[in-house]
Picture 1 (cartoon, helix red, strand yellow):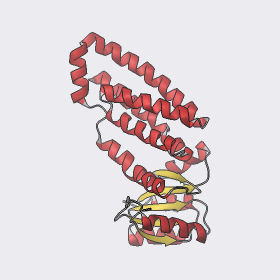
Picture 2 (cartoon, rainbow, N blue to C red):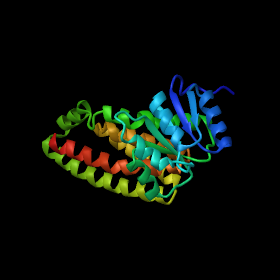
Picture 3 (tube, rainbow, N blue to C red):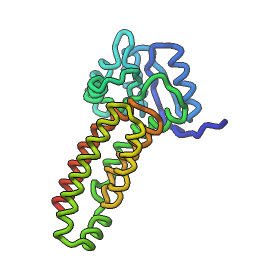
Picture 4 (cartoon, one colour):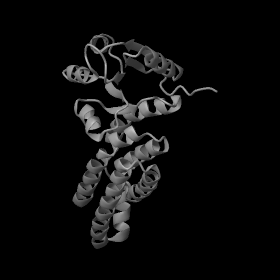
Length: 244
């Protein structure tokens, strides 16, 4: 069965101390079309990041000589660090928040189960939020047409009701992710995508799609890493709509 070249041309450094894991990840990335280099400890990883300038780094957290957390701290001083994605078996939310605070762009859970899901997840993290930031919070073509159709008074009512509905959806999604209820995550993100599209909430729609994809992939770590961004995007949307 052929594997799509999802990572064709991407330069990726894999920093992993376990030889078997390193071999598996390298083979998967190579089949996905990536140009792969490797490091077996944190010190070597930092050296090769600065020497080779890879586009993406897959970083194991628990490595000898210099841990993945220390690698994040060290390369965080650089002017143009790569996209760092942490490979981890940890699912604790505080732990995931910690690696993100240190500069990682996202996390991928171990063990790796699907080669296509690995490629998709790397692209989601590398391009996802970056692409979302290039998308407007509010698509004015859609929102202004809606506003003209409803009239000024009804738009105010719409914004108030939308705020209340999004608060409920956010609370339901946070609870569903914490309780690992993937069915509820899929349901709520489907609703959220529809609501976002109806008012022109472009970035919120992108985020809802990422959460839905992670739920279908049964990727709890991806869900726990991504769901906090929902609060940020909801607040940004409501501010934009109120100002408009």
